[in-house]
Length: 341
Picture 1: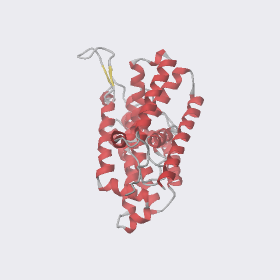
Picture 2 (picture 1 turned 90 degrees about the horizontal axis):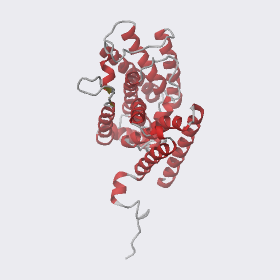
Picture 3 (picture 1 turned 180 degrees about the horizontal axis):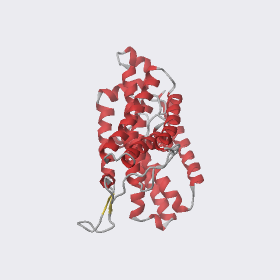
Picture 4 (picture 1 turned 180 degrees about the vertical axis):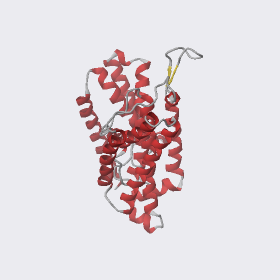
């Protein structure tokens, strides 16, 4: 009897490799390589403060990327998360700073506005059948302008760590004051929130009806419809999830950075989120992706954002190198789709 040989090689057919996923292993190696390379090129990179900076960037990028992953898997995209994140943080911060609202209420409003724009994006894509690129490009422009209108073009500062309501900053970073924790000691507790979000949304994507239907829609929208899936409902759900996490990203952004949130900014931040998702293995054409892979991809982006200045490469070079990394990631996705076609 003739037997058929397995595709791949001894490494790719290894049970451990197949369980973890080859692309995840490659991304982990890329993260390690980046860290080693920056450490060799810059001794200043090898300090605890650098780890904190990497995590600070990873919080808001991770939250945006989690939401964008669902949109990409559904066969769509969300270009509004960057300017949206800033807009929602501006709105919540304005209510706290200028209207005297408690911080917890401002945080809820920040997430609520994100949900509203998620519903809007979902309605335009799922009900009006607008191309996701065009629909979310429009909301990107809307949120960029809306933030300026809400605040009158002025920057907004959320409460400082020592001010009234500054407790919300400790959700992402605890700084010791000498009472029980050595003064100046920094504990990046926000990473625990990110990990919890990753676990929950991994379960939603892989074990729930919502996740399975979003994957089905991204794989073949018409086949999903013919099999009885409410395509409009679950396609909208992908954008609602993205809006929720963009709001959460706005809170993380305001909490981790002491500088004011400036209106008219945020354009380009969506590329960090989309890039992290793609590098982590989410397909641009929809139908497949991994929330854990997205987190790994985010760390590739965060390391670049944090590490490149240490080796003397400023903003322009950072953008060029980030663009090259995205080209490679997208090309790998194209090759992967060709092999599975």
